[in-house]
Image (cartoon, rainbow, N blue to C red; front, side):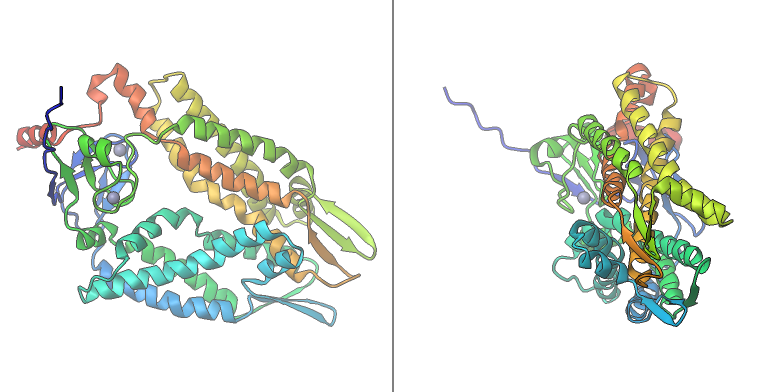
Length: 441
Ligand SMILES: [Zn+2]
Ligand SMILES: [Zn+2]
């Protein structure tokens, strides 16, 4: 007996400006055109979904062009010069990378190079590759890939964290030596501000709609809709099951991140294991007149406080000690709450998830401080800094906890709530939304 072939229903692709799926909780909701300074907030989880941007294209293009010039300037000039007696040591953005490579710390050197130089450089190039052709309505090959990459990589561009690291380093050094600020520092300061502002103002949805007008792909108005994490297209369940990829930007779409809890738990466990050597071993060695001092993360904070550098002590304490522990505790609680099928405190848990994602990268501060110190404090007998055994496990803790947060699927929080309270069910269909709209009018 042969099974009759059922022809697949063609995909209906359309442009829906008036509907949007919340990426954090999966609620499908009606949207409205926004005026400048207006915000659209998810009715279910309070996430800001969009905001009025005004003339974003002019602003972002100007910021991206300025960022290109600043990027060249900030890398060409010195950040600061350290003077001890008659000896001077200049530092540029990449000095720390060079110092790590000299010591054959390849993994750390690569991590610093990628997060403070390579990714920001590619970000500037990507912005220009998208914005300049958009002004002239010229589509170029690979733009969908470029925009997708830009959205994915945002968390890993850590110039702002590096800037904080530079400030901590100069204040720390200013206590015992003379620090002359170079022109690279203010240029870099501006660069960080302009790049962040540029990305923030850029209307990503508008660009996606320009690259591919359809943002809704469905076979049946009664099927559940899921959203693409990257381009925010709404994709019907049948297409998700069949293709697994977003028809607009080709990102993998999951109804839920596969094995989210297992992946998150494994990454949390690895972070906890590495957190022990990261705190037990010295993060750097300081040699002065044939005496060697070992500095762990904690003793570094104590030293700063002892020298009355309270503000810097608090910054390092919060970024290096409070943030990793807080992040791990919140992630453990989130995973446990899903496994225990907790139904309450959805908004609190959702806030925890967002906070974990936001604060994670700031722990990299200490890694940047140690690499900068290693680069500039090279005065032989008078004073010399070398990275310690804790630096690599500490950097690994930061990276692994960031990955743990990325692998946690926040929609799981709402799944349990929906089990007990059908009114909170969030995965809605276009047909249901139509009725909502009708009853509103
Ligand atoms: Zn939401
Ligand atoms: Zn997509």
